[in-house]
Length: 215
Image (cartoon, rainbow, N blue to C red; front, side, top):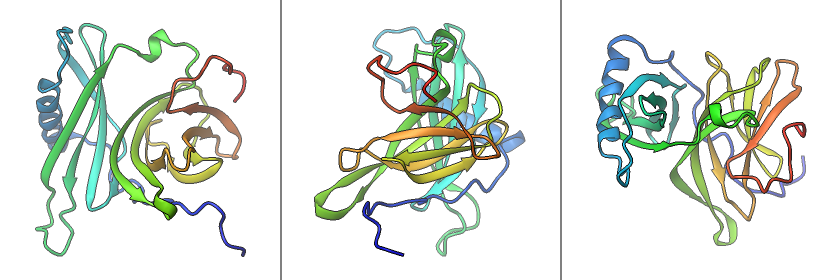
């Protein structure tokens, strides 16, 4: 096999290991997430009361596990973020999650108001990866829900090179992938069980030149 032209980190995170949070575990994560929501700087925007939290598949990277979340508020905003914790199975751990951290933000741009969206995406940078010649990638946590039916697997692709993938769990997904590397930027693609591409979205706002039929 010849050398790979694009030398970049791929499939860096463990695939989801646990079921979507429920019961006492969900209550624990909810407490951390809502504490992060309380610390959002909303610039005077009245966010409203958070509703039910939607949890996404866990992904572990760099010794931490990330569990993303979204929630609608009574004022129509969407809260998004994650709860992360240290891997308790590490040699110096006690077997239980610890060192919890949470991040939350909000947006008024929702899928309800954007019928052209094919995949509803959220993302946060959780680290950096240094490549060749001083190039640096943003290790990005991505989570979302496909808005078209029939999907089975979601991939993250950098210049058409798959750098992560996630089988849908309750029609939700989480990815951890390098972005903004060597002037290349991620696309998130939805595939059927037969491998047919059903939809794609960029992490960045498009310039209006593409329409929803391109996928």
